[in-house]
Figure (cartoon, rainbow, N blue to C red):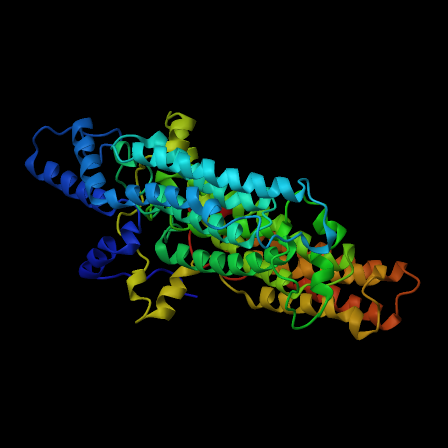
Length: 526
């Protein structure tokens, strides 16, 4: 790991700011016009006045309206596409009958709607959603109508959810709605940027004050988007089985155990497909990775908060449910474990952006600004740095290692945590080595403790969460002590638990390297 981000030349910084690293897909020409306008006002010294921080020039409302109209001219095709996709959704159930080739959920799962109602509800959901997209998309062709665009966005969200909530009996409807829904979300708030953000956005630093890197930079988000996309593919495949679109699930290690897990009472206890719910979460995570500029930790606090909730608490719940499968169900599922493994590194990769956002909100609240206005509209802040330290994402084909290194700033891999993760795998495998069945109590202790050791070790590789490594001390003590109180536990397994438990507990004590600075959060990295 590099201790600090590398400096770049002015030419490279200009290329970076003009490229994806600066603007992404969020109002490219608008942000360019803001910079040019501020520069011109600074040079002319005419009709200018200082903002609250005394750093930049405030634009008049008339100037912002002109920029909004200019932006609409440049992105008008986006809003026409919403209307066209609305027509596509409207005629889909009339073109492809949802009553042909219907299927039932796997494992005889009794869902909340009978087949006939599932067909009719999906049909009318698409007809109504398509009609609303046409109406509000048409209204959105006129500038300064953000409500219409937000309505279209929520219709897109509904389209991605409807096949799961209504248990679509048609694979065509599932594929069509989830794909079009994702496109609608992208066309309303990703490609053109947030509706009417030009009317209130403020220029300012990209690197948070006191930080040595920007947790919202494109390299930082690139790896999250890749993980989210792969997780979406895996979860969608599992959801296709639970919804009945495919008859088997491929598993290279555990054979039919995957189907046992996906058809278990644990999975069927959910009102919708749990794998489909995971696919839905990964869809939103992938799309939200594209949202906003590299300064979104201060310009879009609400979005960072929602993204953080999807990744951190919900991610932890998803991981815990997966690792508890051998305890509750008595079987393993390879692709379920893969989906959890994809989610695991996203937690330490995202937490730094959430911390930067919370620090920004806290400082601005101390300065007397209103919480909800800051939360929904963001703002600017004193200090920080305007230039972006991270390499341009455009450089990835030529310098993949450099861009990848920037994507994991905020994480480091102490040898102690790396070894702890390997020991966690050994703890999980120990019962099988000593011939203990997967449904034995001592096996449950080893399986759950070992899995949690792996999870804790990987999450603690994120420097802002390094303090969490001490949880491994408790887990080490659990596998050291608990087996001795179970009379049917083999002595060899008990001794192995003592050795592994002591090693895991001891390895949790050293701090390991700290490669970055996180302003006020530094005091918690210990």
